[in-house]
Length: 385
Figure 1 (cartoon, rainbow, N blue to C red):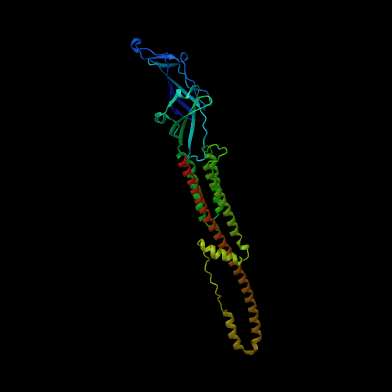
Figure 2: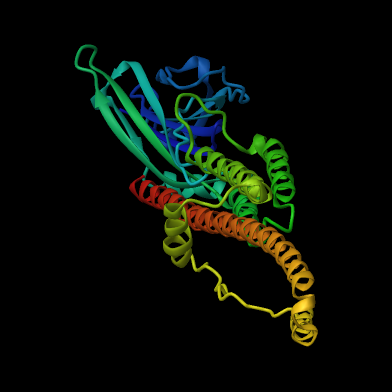
C-alpha cells in the first residue's frame, strides 16, 4: 500500500511537497545485527509508484532528490518536491468577493484503489502556515475525494483547494472612488441650471472617471463569456453620469429657449405646475393679478381747466383728451403683451425646474435600487459559495 501526504506551499505558480510511503518486503533487516534502522538508497535502484498530477501544465522545475530512505521494517519514504504551473478554472462573476475552488487530480496507472491512500487531515494547517500569495488570496479549506474508474480499476484522487480573494485592495482602489464620483455627480443637481453651467462640471467629471477606469483597468480580470459583477457596477456608474449630463443639456436648452415659446397649454400647466410641482416641492409662485388703476394727474388738471374755460375751449380740450386716450391705449396694449410674454417665460422656466427636480428624484431612486440590488447579489452569491 502506498500512502502519500501532499503539502501545498504555493498555489497557481505552484510548489508543494509530496511525501510517499510504501512497504517493500524485500528491504527488511534486523537493526540489531546491522546497527542501523535507516539507510538512504538512490531512487533509480528502487521501485517508485507512478503518481501523477493531471493539471500540471509545465514540467516539474523543482530540484531532483536522488535518494529515498528505507527503514528496517521495510517502509520506503520518498520525499520528492514538485514545482509546476497548474491549471485552474476561475469563476470571476463575484470578483473581487470571489471564492475559487481549484482541483488537483492525482492519478496512478498501475496502482488499484485499495493500494493507494491519501492523508490530508493535517494538510490544511500546514499549507496555510506555508502558503505565500502576496496577500491576495487566503486558503480556507482543503478536501480530498477518491474515485475508482470501473473500466480500468485505476484510482483518481481529487484534492479540492478553496481560496478566498482578499478584496480590500479592489474596494479601496475601484469601488470607493466610483461611489465618491457618483455621489459628486448626484450633488451636482443642487447647482441651479439657469444660472450655472452645470454641463461643464458634469463633462469634467465624466472625463475624470473615464481616465480613472483606464488607469485601473489592470486591476480588473480578463473576462471571457461571463461578465463580472464589478464590470456591471462600473458601467452602470458611467452610464448614470452620461445620463445626468444629457438631462442637464436638455433642461438647460429648455430654460434658455423659454423666452421664445408661446404660453403653455392648459393641460401642461395643470399637470406640471399644480400636480408635479407640488409633488416635487416646487409649487407655483403666487402672483398678484388685481388690476391697478392709476389716475393720470395731467388728465385731472385738464378737466379742471375745461370747467374754467367753458364751452369755448371744450372742442380743443376734447381733441387733446382723445389723442391722449389713444396714446394710453397703445401703451396699455404694449404693456399687456409684455406682461403676457413675461408670464409665459416664467411658466416655462418653472416647468423646466420641475422637470429637473423630477429627474433628480428619479436619479436618486434608480441609483439606490441599483446599488442595493448589486450588493444583495454580491452578498447572497458570496454566502452561497
